[in-house]
Image (tube, rainbow, N blue to C red; front, side):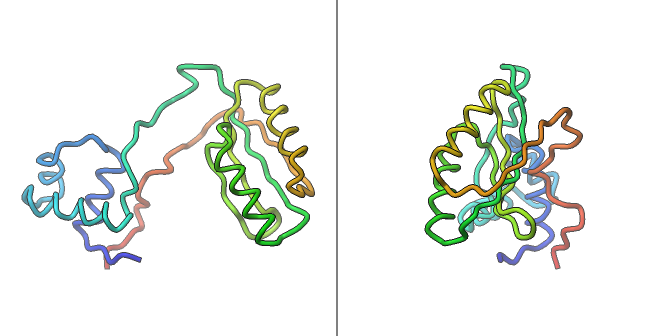
Length: 159
């Protein structure tokens, strides 16, 4: 883990909300001059804490989209099987998030599909690929209540 101070945390909080902010405005908001602020941003990027900058796109405003969450449990838990399955999901254009989990299921997968038929073809292809899926449960998202996955939690303490 990278050691962060209050200025680094402030930078991350601002950039998580406003990735296109100017250097001077960022410096003003965290109460440092531009040069040290920019050096800190570059250090955070080099350390991999800041992974990139991207637009937060609401795809439902562009195309019709179905959000689906899938719980997947594999029958075999060998490194080979899990690596092969994970590699496939990383390449699947429908998969926007995938989390390996401990507990009752092995993976929680977030899927964006054109419609339910598209999702069904995706899951059928996954089952036919013989990844050893023991069981899966599908949840159709009816409403997004909160989607702020890039926010810095308010409880982060720089000390």
